[in-house]
Length: 182
Image 1 (cartoon, rainbow, N blue to C red):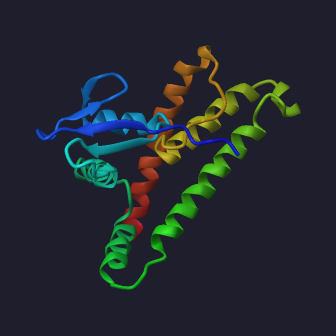
Image 2: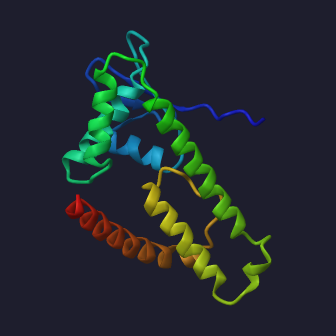
């Protein structure tokens, strides 16, 4: 079994500034969100006490995105999370969410794997564009948190950006329709 790469260490100073130990510079919450979207694991620790603050900062990133109107989680899910924390009983919600995200990540990997060059259908005309669109869709659906395992051809990166914008717009419209239905 492959060993997990060491997470990017971010130290929080007494002034509450966050310091990237890898690049020796200060970073913001948005920078940390970018590292995570790019597939990096991060660990945030308090310089003085050594306490692990990662969970606190990840929740803060989600809260900031929610406050800007970027619906990260549906209200029903947020309500259930609060209920699970406030019930006093041992909750299965964290394990369920972890298993769900693991399954989603595995499913995405399998889709990308099936669309790879090893697939005989990959030689069909237009298959390359369809593969890029599928990867853009999966990235949009997961918010970029699950990094693609297939390399992107350089000539398709610009096209994929346009496709991703179109897919994001469609996804936002669907989310709007769903919220109106509830």
